[in-house]
Length: 101
Image (cartoon, rainbow, N blue to C red; front, side):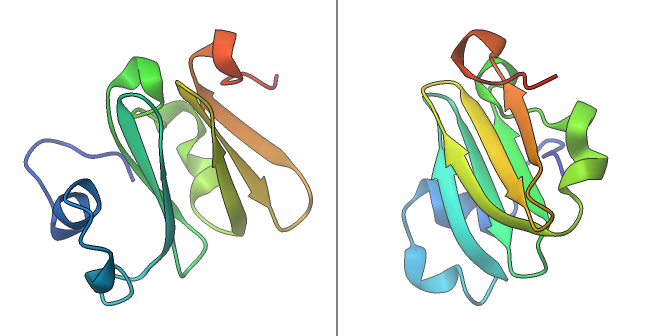
């Protein structure tokens, strides 16, 4: 899910490094780039927010991030998600790994 204005409790907790509340919010792990955040939720979905040029906008790949994500990796301005079937979904700055088409 892409953030759509305002801050959710999840966004607030990650940005303020209040990691003790992340399990309560259903977050398994989180990652960041220079200007964006991605949270892997316990249900295998990914929530992103922040600068769209740094991976904060995952709208183009959101359907692929809705389930079965096992891990998230980040570079300076891109993210990659490893799915349960071994496929990789990338988004963010293509010059920093955000394009695996």
